Image (cartoon, rainbow, N blue to C red; front, side, top):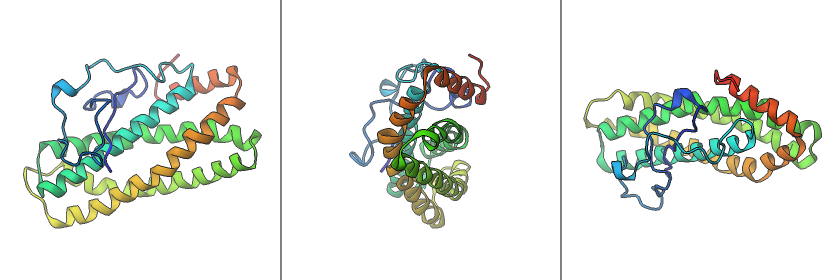
Length: 227
């Protein structure tokens, strides 16, 4: 399982805009385990990120969906990195670059995305949703705690990898990285499906346009942006 870091949205995550931009259409490593970790320039996007979906904070649920696309691509990259290391049994610049990209996304953008959900999406359903939607929100909140804990366990071997010189890997690094990465990806699978398939559509239906406008303003403010 490996997904790759996707394009940033203009003005959405300023700290993440310096990340290496990968092709939006790159196949997943689970489908092609021999795919190179770093795509050639011809397969990469231009420096100007695509604006759809999620082109404006005036459509906050589109932005939330776009964030999920970036989460999935970052998970793809993590999995591709793991496959690369298992095949090469060595560190190289491609591995260091991928590790830095994964660290950057899940250290900076992902926590803000969780805040968006916990401050705006879940409360709407907890106040006005049905029993199934309220239960889903409770489970998703608990999963955020699990994801955060799993990320802390994964950060250490990724930081270690990002600082390594070229050369053979110590066996302990793969022994630490493999289960941590596998758990981190697994925790996201049902989580993202529940949010995309149930929670986001239900919350969007409950929140009137003025509430969504305010939601977008607050999401932008958390990222140091004014709209």
